[in-house]
Length: 385
Image (cartoon, rainbow, N blue to C red; front, side, top):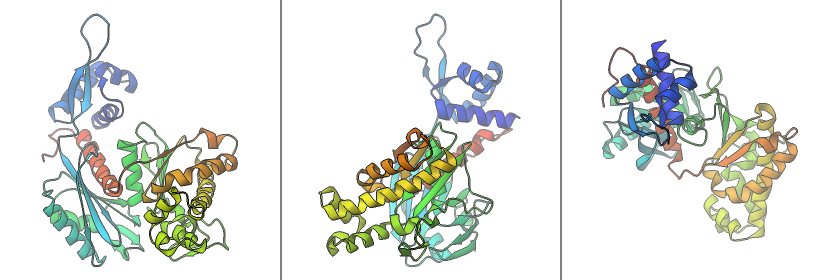
C-alpha cells in the first residue's frame, strides 16, 4: 500500500505539477498527513522538490508547489535499425542533451551490442542511470528478450540481459513504436491522457496502443502490427508486409514507387525528402501521390476510430515530414468513413520531434521506468547515479 501511494503521488506531480500537497490529497483521496509524509520522503530522495509558492490572492500562508526533479539523473536511449544505431542522452524529462549515430556493418546481436557500448563510451555516457533500447520486432514480457525481429534477423535474443552485463545499468527493451507511444504518454502529447493511439509512418506503418496509461502489447508482445492490415488484396506488394497492406500503400518505399509510376523524374523520386520537396514546390504529380496516400491514411485511421473511439491520435515517424501534404485528405476521409461523429471528435496531432525521435522515445522509456521504480521503492534510498 505504501509503495502504491508513493507511486500515485509521484505520478500526480509528474502529470499536473507544479501542484500543492492539498491538491494532491484531494485528487487522490488521500489524507493531507499521508501526502505530506510521502512527499517529504520523495523530496528527501531527490525525486521531488519544492518549486515555489502558489500564486493565490488569499490570506494566510500560501501553499508550496511541488515538481519532479528531472535533472537528478541522465538516461540513454538507443534506436536500433537494420542500418545504424542512434543514441540520445536525456535528462529524466526526456529533454535531449546529445545524440549520435553509428552505422552497422551487420545486425548480428554481438555487433549491435558492441556498437551500443562503444557509442555510449564515445558520448561519455557510461554513467547513465538506465538505458532504453527500441527496435523493430516483438519483445517478450520480460522487457529484455527480442522474440522475433524480421528486419534484424533475430529470434529469442536476450539482448537486454546481454547489454546489462556489459554496462551494469538497468536495460529495458521495447518495440520501437511502443516505446514512442510510452514516451508520448509520459512526456509528449499523450501526457494526461489515459487512452490514446500513436500511429507512425516511415519505413513501415506502426501502431502504439495506450490504455489506462499503459502500452498494450498483447499476450506475446506482438500487438500493433498495423502495417500488415490488408486494405486491398489486389493492391501493391511489399516484401515485409505482403500485398495490399497499409505498408504497401503508405511506407516511404511505397510512396517512391507510386511517384515513379506517376512519371516523377528519377532524381526527384530517389528519396522521401526529395519527393516531399517536389510536392511542396507545387509539382502536381508529386502532390497527387501524397493526396492519394492521405486518403489511404484516412481510411486506416477510420478503422482505428471505429474500434477504439479515441479522443487523441498522435501521428509520428519520419513519414510525417509530409504531414502538410497528407493531412487534408486524411482528415476528410476519416470524418466521412468513421461511424457517426467519431471522426470529428478525435484530435489528430502531428508529432514535431526531430530525427532523434526514435532514440528519444527509447530514452523516455528508460526514464519513465527509472522514475516509477524509484518512486515505488520503500525502506531505502533510490539508486544513486
